[in-house]
Length: 459
Image 1 (cartoon, rainbow, N blue to C red):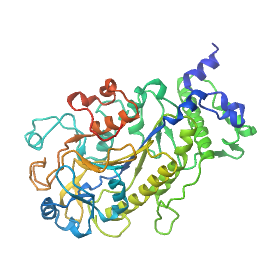
Image 2: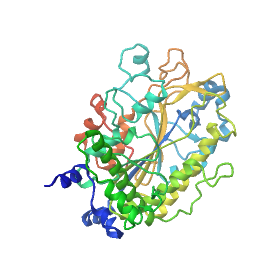
Image 3: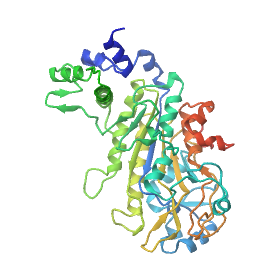
Image 4: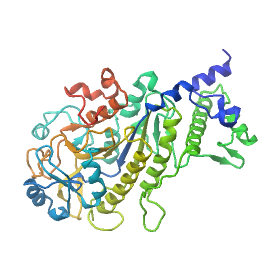
């Protein structure tokens, strides 16, 4: 094999784009295209700052009185809550009024809440934490560290995340290019040990410079770029740069191809202060447009990381200002409802699952500035036709300050999680095809748990 061919094979690059035209962008084999009906995508919506789950999912039975007493000025009036049908885990619940568009999803069994989830090294109780009798994750109240840990950092030099590791362990028939995708500068969750992460911006990066159009590989300047990225270097640093540059160009060719096949959604993803769309709405609109194309092109498994929000609400958590939790939850609910509507209209109801996570939870006790402080366990949710919805998974914690679930020595209401991040991650990655035998490689701390997953997914 020549050095040139060896370089191309090692870098994972394809010579096809140099051929130009539609054939040049046929980046998946016919056998992969035939398997396109078995398409599954996980969209992880990560709410930056630490969303206050206590005001997202609220008990409406007798426990509401404990909630109201502990939350004081942050407590949502009971009459304002939007009731969820039925009962679950021994309680009835209502949603923050801004989340009203999501009630029908819950009633249809397509939306599930995950109660008191967070990072754990091993199962722990509040009593064990207060007695320093159990290992807990480090830097529990640090934004940057908790974002990294929630997304799979295991306190080692390895910077891979749980979704990235799991994607690399999928059966070979389920692997494909563009498996790990981020829509932001952050990539921890989808970073694998050896594979690349693809960066996606709405519409893809089609135009690079004058005359360079990745949608038209036959153009002379585009040809020059495509030849340039296949340059080979003896210097390891130049070779590494060339490999990364080549990967970025090929990734964008694939996105441009998908965008060329996409249809603009008609659902209302929301507006923000007179602008055409909210930042989250714009991201989800673009994803909703390309996901059907990804399926038709033969991609099998994908994970998309979407990070959004400013939910570090130490002050002014309530109200109509743009940075309150109330306003941001309304934007999220609007965008998610439109995303879900579009996926269903495109026949992807069973193919796309959305998982919401955040840095950490907030204290039950309000802070001094009309907000709440950093905590630990939090309430998340999952949405999609494959979700075992219409219920709350886990054990709902007591909102009593200093109560059985409060792991804070000052009784501020910092709940010790009863479901680990790894158990949630293993559940959704098993839905994507991760085999139980590979759980511990993707989620090392699961070795300390007898129950590896929760019944979050139907299949």
